[in-house]
Image (cartoon, rainbow, N blue to C red):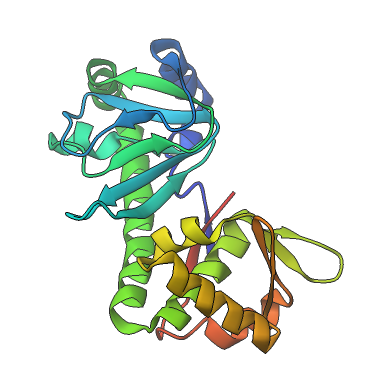
Length: 235
């Protein structure tokens, strides 16, 4: 597993003086749980950085089924692509809990972008890392059965969001419904697959969370299922 710190945060990689400029030109905004930050197709007019809470990036099928394509956590940036290429928002962004964001307008983003060349350099680094991460997910979706995709999703979540104990077990706080939206399958199908992992002794299903009994062994079994090393954001 290759973990990438600051996968969604180019601001953290900037000099302190430039970070201070960004903060001075930004405004704070709060979102309630379930509130939409922006919708797919909206004009790209602002850059956001989470200060607390969480935001899911999602798309909807024609029949209304939701697929979650990403989750943003404190420190993560979103909205920069539209400011750079001028295209509208490519996903919906919805707060999954009470959330705070720091908002930088396009005018101020453009001002700082042209003033400090290092901003474009660090944006390029962040976007390249995101692309590598996206390639991993795409290869999973195109080449693996649901059982393997689900295992690799759990493996990534364990490194990004998991809490390990002294016995080598790793707990992931996630519902079956949220996991199903991540892998593009029905909740019932995902629950069936999770129960098969539990019968194998790989995981334990608990209320509101999944416990991976031996993360090292679990990773060795599914790490190279797609022929490439897993990539996961590190928080």
